[in-house]
Amino acid sequence: MTRSSKVVEYVHLDLGGAPTVEECDVLSESIESVRCRWCDAVDEVELVDRPGAQV
Image (tube, rainbow, N blue to C red; front, side):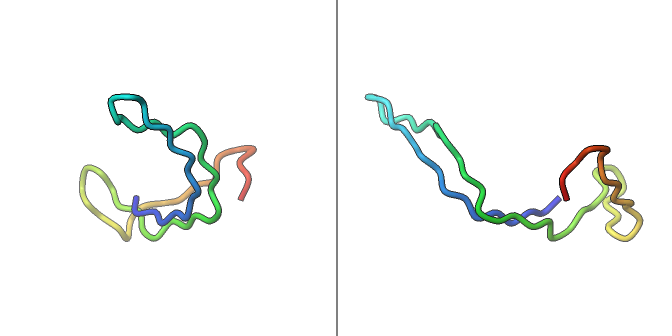
């Protein structure tokens, strides 16, 4: 899946300089394309909503 996201992340750096995302707010998100992992097809993939998912 190729997805574009616009997010605001709050990043904490420890004393060694390693970053950790403490909070992430997703402002927008869109799925650009979906392809099969095994056969690499993009035109034969069926998208099915999960029960109870918000669309």
